[in-house]
Length: 285
Ligand SMILES: Nc1ncnc2c1ncn2[C@@H]1O[C@H](COP(=O)(O)OP(=O)(O)OP(=O)(O)O)[C@@H](O)[C@H]1O
Ligand SMILES: [Mg+2]
Image (tube, rainbow, N blue to C red):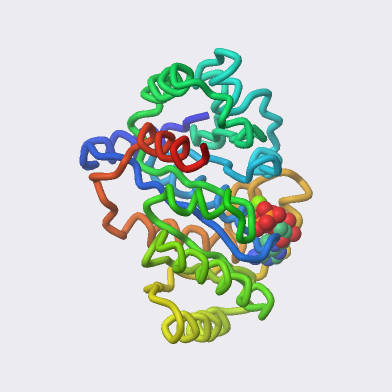
């Protein structure tokens, strides 16, 4: 699926990229259905297209649907690597431009059943996923132990909300829990389904004021994604909107977000994919 230009971009970024660990970014929200999966899938495609190497970890345990949004039906998930001796290559699904998708499946509740030996073998297998620039984790919504666990595991947190008051209050409640358990001290915010940038900024400022007043948490505005019916059409057609409608408002917004994320200096001292799963094992068992 790699086109010529994509290969060139990857070569170019190979030369310039510091040999570091991937940036591990979690996208989450308080309220469900606000657009996390659509943003993770399309943002990952935009980053991959620009020459980065991206892996989506669909961590919406039991309800993951990043595969559905890309029109795939993966046969296996993380637990087939652990319990059914599948290899990483058999389980990771290849998306547009060579983007990888690792489905978590519904097995996190079986984490206690994994022996130390199985954990070690799994972590060893993950070394074939080196050379990534980004791991984007898509979590479920709401304040659950699972979602808080994934927030604790990541290095960068993106909170997604729409301008609707219900979405904002749920996002606030989630950050309150993050703050209470001291999981993260900063988060970036994307406002989805805004009618224009002005509405997005008003929404962000309102949210930021509430957080500044009551929580010990620093927020940063990352950007917005427009309300766009092309997204609804693309979901129905099981095609990422950035592929089906590259020039629609939402696709342009996603490109801008991808550029902004690439422009932010990430830590090269990160925990890496093996460190991420070691952390997941220790938090979830
Ligand atoms: N910017 C947008 N413009 C128009 N519709 C949108 C937009 N973003 C999301 N939607 C609609 O919201 C639906 C839900 O989006 P999505 O599945 O990405 O949300 P989610 O936060 O991942 O949900 P869940 O919490 O269930 O995982 C989409 O199928 C689409 O119909
Ligand atoms: Mg989702």
